[in-house]
Amino acid sequence: MKIYCMSDIHGCLAEFEEALALVTEHLYEKDAKLVLLGDYVHGGAENRGVLDKIMRLEQRFGSDKVIALLGNHDEWVVEGSATIDQTERAFAQSEYDYDEKDDDEYIDWLGNLPRYYVEGNTIFVHAGINEHAGEDWEWSTTDDIYTEKSPAETGKIEGLDMKVVAGHIGTAEIAGNPRFHDIYFDGESHYYIDGTVLDSGVIPVLMVDTDTDKYYQVTESGNWLIEPYGEDY
Image 1 (tube, rainbow, N blue to C red):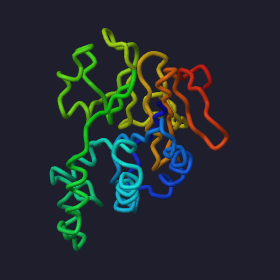
Image 2 (image 1 turned 90 degrees about the vertical axis):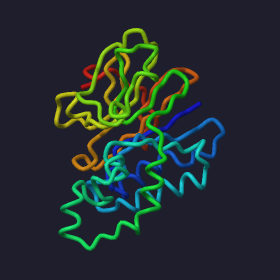
Image 3 (image 1 turned 180 degrees about the horizontal axis):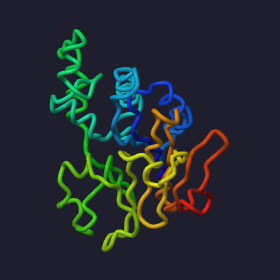
Image 4 (image 1 turned 30 degrees about the vertical axis):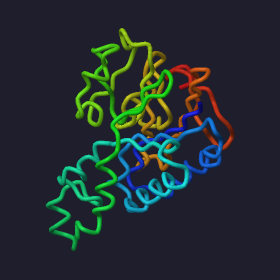
């Protein structure tokens, strides 16, 4: 199975469409899926456009081929502490004529998104899991860890022979390099794919080949095996 994934779109529809252009044709293949790791809103100006795009992709290819996960910004909208356009509800209500009823369909859809997805040797999640639980991670990870875990953990996960693919925290921050917005691999158990689109203008695309347990960055020039950060930078 080939799993294409991206994260932290944050209302940036044009950048999302550029990333999807590398992926969509593959979704017609039997052994391909798209996994989106959350944070579809807040930041860019096309929040509803991004949500519409994902919902149409689900309808077109099926929810077994297009899997959207819940991010912390999406959860704030579901909980009512934020609107689709603003992270602070009070600000949105004071500055805009906001009708929550117009967004009921989006809020209902977001509220039904899963917090993680597992395929082969890989756990896909917005922020992270309870790594201290080893093989019992699925039963001991609380909802807030899935969507808001911070800081990002690196290194080998003891007692768990799996990889974690997550977004949530920009790879520039994890790498300690403000110019780095690609996929970060720690050489052990973690791949982080939030390229901070609001700064970089790019949404990185990761492809996981679960048959070979290899991880590639998908680009216009081809798929490139991801090396641990520091070996090429």
